[in-house]
Every structure is written in C-alpha cells, then in structure tokens.
Length: 198
Length: 198
Image (cartoon, rainbow over all chains, first blue to last red; front, side, top):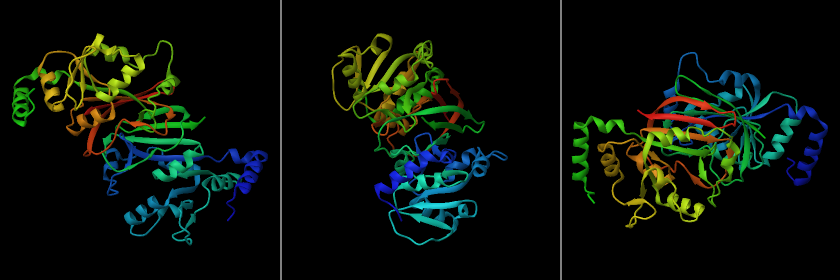
C-alpha cells in the first residue's frame, strides 16, 4: 500500500488533471441527538425510534441511491456486527472500507484500511463511481474533517437529549466555515441540517 | 438563603397551588457552532459574524421583549466583563442572576446565587413576571437540564466548525426527550432549532 507523502502529492496532481474526480462526493449522512451524541454509552440506538414514521426514511433511500461506496470507523463497524450478530449488511449494497489502525484481512465483504485517509479518498475520487457515504463514528469524522475531506454534511437532529455517550464531533481540529443548504423540518420533530464544503 | 431540601419541597408544593407559576418560562436562547461549541478556547466570538446581516436579529429583540430576568453562569459572566471592559449590559435590561459556587456581594447590577438552582427557578416562577432568559454557559445549562428546568430551547446553529472550545452540552446527565417546534432556516445559513420541555 502506497502511503508516503510523495504518493499523495502525485495523486493530488493527477486529481487536477482529471476533472471526473470532483464529481464523486464524500457525504456524511448521520443522526445525532440535540446534544451531539450518535450513540449512548451502551451503544443503545432505541432513542432513534422516537422519529420512526411509516413511509418516511429521511432521505436514506436517496442516500443509498447516490452512493456506491461506504466508509466507516472500526468501532462503528464492530458496533454494527454486535447489533446484527456478526453481519455487515452495508457490504451487500456498497463497496465498504473500514478505517482502522490495525492490519486486518478482508472479512464480511469489507476492506480494512490502515493508511492515510487522504490517500484513500483521493484514490476513490480518481476512480469513476457514485458518491462515498460516510457513516461515522466520531474518530473517522474527525480524521476526515481535519483534512476538510467531507464534501457534504447531512445531519439529522433527533429531538432527544442523550446526556452521555459517543459524540459525533469529538473536537481537536482547526476551525473552518461551511456553506449551509436549506435545512428541513419533519413533523416527527427531526431536523435535517445540510451543509457543503466551502 | 434557604437551600435545604425541605424548603424546595415547600416551594414545589406552593407551586402546585399557584397556577401563575406555570406561565413564566425558562428559555435557553443561544448560538452554537455545528459541532456544538459556544465559544472557542480563547473566548473569541468573531465566528458569529459569519451570520451578521443588517436588519436580521434572529429573534433577539423578541427574546428581550418576552423576558425580564436573565440567568448566566459565573464564567460566562466574567467572559462578558472581559469583552466589555468591566460592564454587564444585560443588567440594564433584566434582573440578573449569576450562578456560582462562590459567595459574592452584588456588583454591576447582578445578584450572585450559590444555592440550589431548582430553588431559584421555583422562587422566580412563583413571582409574577416575564420569561427567564438563560444564556449559558455549559455548566449552568447542565445544572438546569439535570432537573429538566429548561422550558424552551432556542438554539441557533452557525454554519461553522469551531473544532475546539467550550461546549453547550457538556454531558453527564440522564437522557430525556424534547418536543420539537418547527425550525427556521435563514438565508445567512443560520438554522434556529426550537424545542419545548415534554
């Protein structure tokens, strides 16, 4: 795996010559409580049911339709395995990358990636394809935001205070502005915030 | 100052007999970055200027109009003094309470309160008056939320990632649901979220 600075520079240079790269977007599509948590301390997700409504998917199908690649942090990946009893349903729909510090063999239809995230995103953007769906958690979101690699943020705010748990935005990065797109209020009380990279 | 449990129970009992108490609301009216910070580590507030727009006050005058009392944490109070060179302009408009663990004499038109926050809110609600405007910071918001004492949350989300600083929701409390009111999107990119106590 190519990981050194030179390879990244080379890829970034190639990116400039290849306009197709700007078409694939990295999209963070995720739900959080008003107080900024994506899961409580026990990975309980029952609080999300507060906004469940027949016939309303809050753009999930559209998100699925526009994406063919899925990236997620290792802890979130393992949380999904816990919840499903060892399955990773996303690998049936997307090319899946699990970001980790570990060196691991492919399993459950996912590829483990332990290199520079910027290198992976640049590589994916060089390839033709649909958008890249990022599903958290906080550490991978931080890694991507540190390099301003998220093109679009679609964040569903659930009308719940979790009070504790795993944060979507764990801090420790530099300030940057975003371009807001009109947000959407749903009858269930969910507010979907929408931003683009400036 | 009455602080013991018995006095609180007595006040809560009186509250039940006095319907007027339910009319005054505790309203959290505050701005935060998308990643949940209300100030950066240096108390710089320049990022708020991203949404400044002539003739648009995001409901600030309406908030001022509906309130006659203002409560704020001691650190936020001192941040204001720093920014203004020792003045506390809110004391010209409201009856001001600064919540602190310290015992301090009245100054700058504010009363320092170091008792049980529940006792203060119950006392204020027993009195006739307009709403009670809470302006943070994170510690006083936590204290109020711990007891579910905030009647209304009006949170302006600024299209900026601060990346670091002082959080609005510092965590360490129990889960509870909120009732969402339609949120409002402004052309500047500010999204104003609005919730009520269930």
